[in-house]
Image (cartoon, rainbow, N blue to C red; front, side):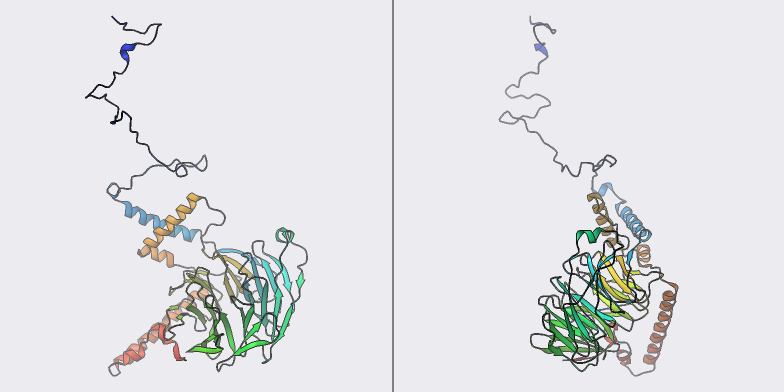
Length: 495
């Protein structure tokens, strides 16, 4: 008989697993026809299951079956409410001030090729080129004898053009700052630079604005008329006018660069075509428009800043009605500029506040103000859409975050996913009354709060008066009294 225990000659053969027999199987094993075993493996992405630091929590697998989570929607609504509250808690939009001007900042310009470079012109004729991250002036551009009213950088970023009350247009070469200049602690005198070309106005009077062509070495100035200049010539190549005393603003279309629009002191908005050297059409409003900005993504749309405290967005193909009326300011709006994404724009007002609007939003998404900030003359979005630059009457250029509660610096992938999740939750539950109330609440100075209440009283009074007129008038009077807000301020369209 074979041995029943392990001996020194080898293992106990009686404990071996029995071999597979024909027509039978061994329990616990999976066999196929070719006598091979099928093994099912779990496939996972290593990045999702690896901790980024030792203090990170381990990945927990969750079953997303809705039947197992009956309170899922209530939990997400609460998370959206908490995210909205935290946005208000961490809303610190002001980053810093670029100091150095000795008079009010009248105009700003950004470089289309360098994110960190900006230019500002002051009422004393001084132009400063800034390195925004270090908040230092790189160059002083001296030459203007009066206030600098407009400044613009060419499409290649190599030159900038300025104009002012001294009836001159000056072309400057944009200097390239060395590595030592960028990262030095300051203290040395800022280098000065002279203009490479000086052009004098032939029509008399100062210039109010300047804008560079998006594809050619040319620029347009706004003054007694719109004049088109070549970068290498001291005489204007073309002059455009349409029955207006003073042109206040001019802007080239970013997509169709041979089309430009202008705002005039006769309350008009005019569209011109450089190729045919003729005006296209003109819109007359009840109040004067101060500045104009094209939407860079939908280039047939533009927004104008008006002196009646509102901004109006128009489609150049149909000027008889505004596409949107943007409210909330309590004084004249002085400047407007679009984000490179085309989804929002920033505007500055005489009431000393800066507001950011969605391109189709009737009310501002956010409002910025500071105790020492005076009338805001100029505003600009950065070329990456992350920051906002403003110039005001208190001799400072200020830098703000476009998202008031945005976290500066590099975010980890897990932090980015969390931010995206919270943004999606806020968008999903934005109609909830409590979330809507918290998101719309903005703290403003007391003077602006009182002015807003007074404007509401005046608006309600005007509405009551219109209703009483309709009650005591012939049928059909309501069409005359109650015009849509998008048509109310339009006087006429001229072709």
